[in-house]
Amino acid sequence: MTTNPTRRTMLRALGSGAVAFRANSAFGATTAKPNIVVIVSDDHGYADVSAYDHPSEVKTPNIDRIAQDGVRFAQGYASAYVCAPTRASLMTGRYSQRFGFYTASDSRAGMPLTETTIADLLKKDGYATGAFGKWHLGLDMAHHPLRRGFDEFYGFLGHGGHDYFNLKPTEQKYDSIWRNEQVIEDTGYLTDNLGREAVAFIRKHEKKPFFLYLAFNAVHFPLQAPEATVKKYDTGNPKRNTLLAMLEHEDRAVGRVLDELKAKGLEKNTLVVFFSDNGGAKNNAANNGALRDFKHSVYEGGIRVPFLIRWPAKLRANMVFQQPVICLDVLPTVAAAAGASLPKDREYHGRNLLPHLTGNASGPVHDWLFWDGGEKKLAARNGRWKLVSNNGKAELFDVESDLGEKTDLSAKHPDVVERMQGALDTWRTGNAPRIRSAGGADEEDDEGGRRSKAERKKRQSERGKR
Ligand SMILES: [Ca+2]
Image (cartoon, rainbow, N blue to C red; front, top):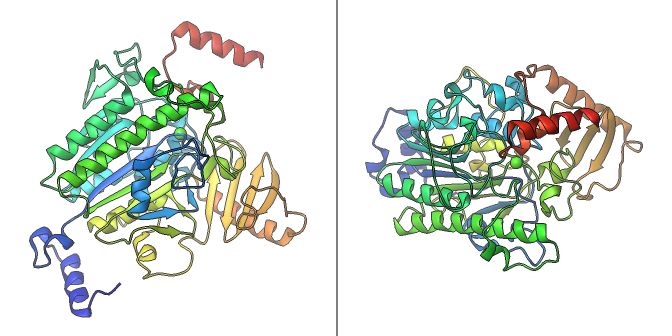
């Protein structure tokens, strides 16, 4: 950075003091609190963003704009291979296992109320806060977004998926569409609606700093998209055609948000983050490119995701960042950008990425990264090494030279395996027991969608026979 010392000193003084009017300071717009937009995509394949190495049928021109005007992470990770625990880590900046949140089903109990969310922090800092889309962090009012730091909410509380066309109130309130604290009836295509709501939120709050959390359930199951869009695709695989149509609608919604920021003159001083909550899902015909496996796996295809960040006022355009980062980093990065302080009574496992992205810090962002899905599927990352442990069977990969995790090097490097297993075990001793409450199978909680009681019973009986 080329900031001169005098300015740096003054900025520090402003940052450390109780100066609430930084937006009006002598530095003008450059020191105004940035708006924050966090966009989460769902089950989005690593190769299903055209800013990444992708098959020719994938075109995401709007999502790509975030990369063109900012940073593309080559090694961006979700903290889990399913939806809910990643969201819990995003919201808290902490490994969700620290508070017992390991699986999709743990969302039934809800993210513990002892946790402070990114929205809590920003709201306290004067931000207008809105959540639009899939919540998946609790089904009851105590865990509702409006009790977790958000001023506004449009979307559904749980579980993993939602019908994209049927937006009528249902038997299960949590599966209905809500506006703030009320169940509502809506029409249209859910992904389009989320774009509409996000744009309305920006218009409403253009004069003050805002935090927009746009959590698409696209491109999660069920595979549904407007027929006219599906017809545009001809891959030879009907599932893939529908997924691409869903993706097109999501990309358009992202485009509407970026266009609105531009139209309001907010583009430069808005920090936009985009990432997927886990890897692409096999049953949805997602494409994870060269990565091994899919959602539900600790191989790279389950956890390495498209991950982008843009903040034109501070970060340069068209940058590719090579060090591993993880969704835990979003909260500390956003807090630093906003000048919001983090509570001192808890440990944050994410890192502020800004010094790394501006060249003020070198070396790896994280020495270690860990995964534990609560079902004997574990992983650790340290430098080029990745330890994968499925049902107690350890494998070792050099993911820098072997992106597809094809060659298990555990027999060749038993010392590395031992060291990594030791670090993983130590990390796990700091984790809490699962919070999961009674009822619901993991698989079902992840799929979500609408099922009658009879359908649920039938599925449970079928599961029993397997
Ligand atoms: Ca997901």
